[in-house]
Each structure stands twice: as C-alpha cells, then as structure tokens.
Length: 153
Image (cartoon, rainbow, N blue to C red; front, side, top):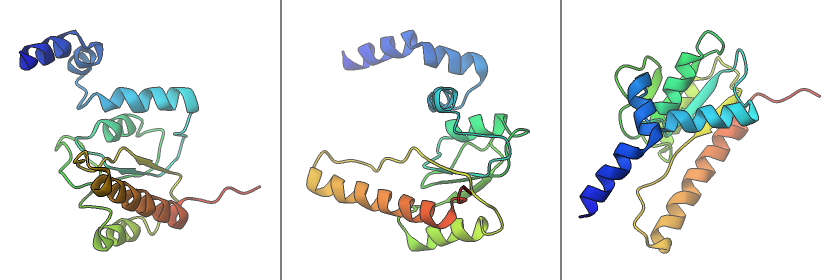
C-alpha cells in the first residue's frame, strides 16, 4: 500500500515532471535555481565548490551557467552522473585525505562560493547522528575559512 501511495505522489509531483521534460538529473536542480533566484548567490566569474553533489542536480545547474561562471569543483562520497563534466573528487570531506585533495585541486583559484547539500546517512539516533552532522559542518567551515575569497571593503 505504501508503494502505491509513493508512486502516486511521484506521478503528481510537478518537479518530477519538469525534471523529465527538461532532462534534469535530479530535483535538487530546482532547489538551487530557487535559492539563486532569491539570493543571487552565483555571480559571473565565480569559482565554486559543490559539496555533497551527487547525483548532480546542483552541479548541472552550475554547468548550465558555465559561460557565466568560472570553475566548478564537485565532491561526494558517491559518483556524480557521468554526463556532467566537472572537476569531481570522489570521497568523504570528513576524511583529511579528501579535504586535502579539494584544497590541492583548488589551490590556483579564488573560490567565491562553497555550496553544500550534504546529509550523512542518518540512523534516527541523535547520539550517533549529531556528531556526524557536527563533523561535516566543522569540515565545511574549515574549507570556507581556508578557501573563500575575502571581500575587500
């Protein structure tokens, strides 16, 4: 019964239908489009790091703006859609080796934005899940502090 309900929800989801029409990899494409429309976070010439990018909705959105933005660096623990041509790093940003790969790959670029749609695999047990979230946030903040271009006043 639950499967039938889920299937009906999927059939009636306007974003699922738009996704198919526009050849969009994932529904998250619409999320970043709306965020950018409201807050104008992606500007011409920006170099961007996309963390937690798989299956690739946000990266696809960025690639479609390619002539307007700079380099795109993507990272996730699962592979990104093969159709997307980007500077992709496969791995967990909570691992020092992967964080160092991102830093090394972006060493010659001023990074303007770090986007993240990361969520750990959650158990529903806060004593297990909260430390995972804290570690992810800690790593993202470290990367932001290290890589984001400082605004001149």
